[in-house]
Image 1 (cartoon, rainbow, N blue to C red):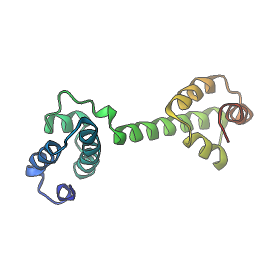
Image 2 (image 1 turned 180 degrees about the horizontal axis):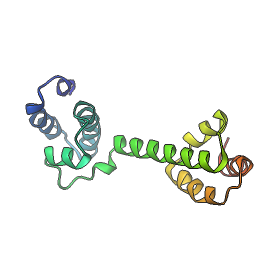
Image 3 (image 1 turned 120 degrees about the horizontal axis):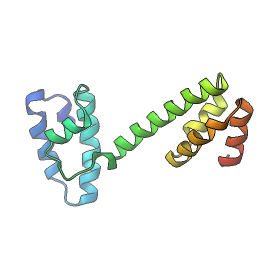
Length: 134
């Protein structure tokens, strides 16, 4: 799999497909796909998820189900919520930033809705106190 990092771009798709073909089960395929996807995104940052999916001939596979995609999506959610809270409440203390970065996607979505009613930092602190297991 590490070979994907060093092979020329012209052959990386064929090598990646060969690696994916070695998976014995759907669960193993998704684990391998997760790693291959991470390597390809790193190696070919100008390609979109759809372009990588086409490169690998993955019409029937949702890349959004891979762990790599879920982590990238969650980081995007966290960053968006932090920016929105910053605009609504001002500078966010490190303690609250850490709490927000530890939230699940469902909790981030709930916070995103709740922050529309926040008047200041006290509302954020109270929401975190009520909604986060510390």
